[in-house]
Length: 297
View (spheres, helix red, strand yellow):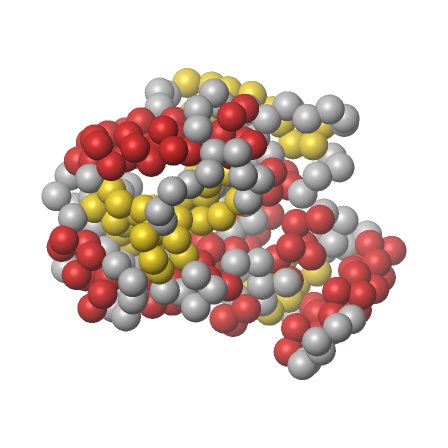
């Protein structure tokens, strides 16, 4: 961890009710002036290389989704498997690798070339964890697709369906399906957690995983609900949730900051809110999660 990474870690640790973001931005401006990446220890001991020129960096150093981070800490155990679809720079990939250890497995998919390069650098620095990284998008059918990364938005918002105005880089990337990759079955005696955050293409990912979602060893799912990106892909989140429930028996739960959950209730398709949900199928999964300390199922 370099000088600037140490400074960011110190700011994160200080009890500053106000002014924390100003200090973070000041440090990142110095990093930009040097034109280099910064290595920093983030939350829960996660070490990452970040690009100070990208708005994704300030998002990550803020502890962006504490509820999801705490939930994963409760759910994942040594020997489990974790599949990260839309891994970006690898924040959750690395957190999961620390939890499942060398006895478990982590598989990350990130198609956008810029993001994949940083993801690969981060996973190579992660030590002996079993992490497999794929430079591919995940969808309903195998093939190729164009992914677009806007130069004036965080790199985590690269998408195959959202087309914002402004400058952007486009790349042709391979598309695979989860069923073809066979990465989702839960290990014997353990759990598989499937995280899907792909800027509007979530339903396509699930439609390409019908066999995995119908299996006796089906994964527990963590999925982003985003009305804007879903509508760009011509569906509403409520339609996807109804399909997951009707076809595969998944019930949706809201993830609270504590890392516990509660039944989702009615989702407002007109809401601008973006949030993660936990999807659980069957009493056996509910009991397994409850035994690991997840309350509210």
